[in-house]
Every structure is written in C-alpha cells, then in structure tokens.
Amino acid sequence: MKRNIVIATLTAAALATGGTVAAFAAGDDDATATQSQTNTSAQSAADRDDDASEDRTAVRSGSVTAAEAIAAALKHTPGTALSADLDDDGADTWEVTVVKGDGTEYDVRIAPDSGKVLGAQRDSDDDNDADDRAELAAAKGADTDAREAALAAAAKGTVTEVGLDDDNGAVAWSVDTVKDGKQGEWKVALDSGKVTQDRDDDGDDA
Image 1 (tube, rainbow, N blue to C red):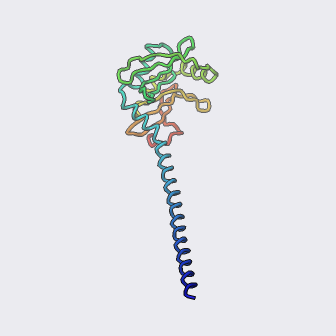
Image 2: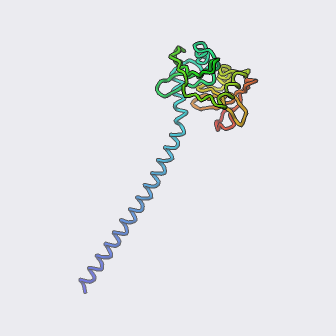
C-alpha cells in the first residue's frame, strides 16, 4: 500500500514538473515572437530612414550645389538638362542628364567638391519613347529650366535631386531637399517657377 502511494506521489510530481516546463516553454515561444516582431519593426524603421541617411551623407560630401553642377554640365555638354542627382553609391558625384541638340542623351558626372567635370557618357540604353520625347519637349518649352528650378527650391533646403515629373499629364520639376536632417519634396512650376510642396510628401515643411 505504501509503495502504491509513493509511486502515485512521484507520478504527480513528475506531471507537475512537466506542466511547469511546458508552461515555461510556451512562455519562451511568446517572448521569441514578441522579440521577432520588435526586430521586424526596428528593421522597417531603419529601411525608411535609408534614403534620408544617404542624402544627408551625400550633402556632407561636397559643397557644389545642384544649380552649379547643372551649369558645369551644360558648359561641358551643351543641350537641355533634364535631371541632376547627387548620387551616393560610393562615387559621391553629381550626375546630370543632358540631351544635346541632335537628340542624343549624355550622363555628365560632376565632382561635388570642385565642380570639375569627371566625364560624360552617352546613354546607349535610351529608348527615346513617347514619354521621353514629351519630357524633352516640356523642358525645352519651359520658362523655368532645371538650374532655375534647383535655385528656386534651394530656399527650402539643400537640393539633392531635380528632375521632370509627369503627374497625370501635368509636368513640373520635382525637387528633393534636405534640411535639418529631414527630407522635403517639392514641385516647381515650369512656367512661373513657383515652389509648392509635393502633395504626396508626408513631410512637415510647407
């Protein structure tokens, strides 16, 4: 009889211990899931900051403005400037897209610290499709060119990119800026040069 009682007691203790272990295991699973969600949220936040971080790094790398880079590119390769981008892919150069009078497109690289032309390469991948022709026509007929658009938007911050944007048939210059560590996106009218905040931009600047 005593032997049966001892066996029953040991069995109950084992079940209780196992239950406790199972409970701890379940608790560990919840903690792991919570930690995983936290890590995912942190990664998403880091991804959202990537573009702003790259722009800030590029801005710190040189003192040549977008307007100056465009002017230097046009002096080297006369034509119509369609865009300028302060690239931060390791080269840290301004890349200005210029279309010459014969329709050929060139990417002109400008040093961000000296404004020196580092080279010009013809864009052999240019398809010159209907959209490209429409943008070129809009740029040629604009009262405000890319350099002037960059100058106008400079009042909102340091310009890191300027280019043409077609929003449902309404073509305007689209300009990205950085100010106090924050990005801004702006539209510059082709006719008047008026600067307005991009309606798709969630920034706080106005």
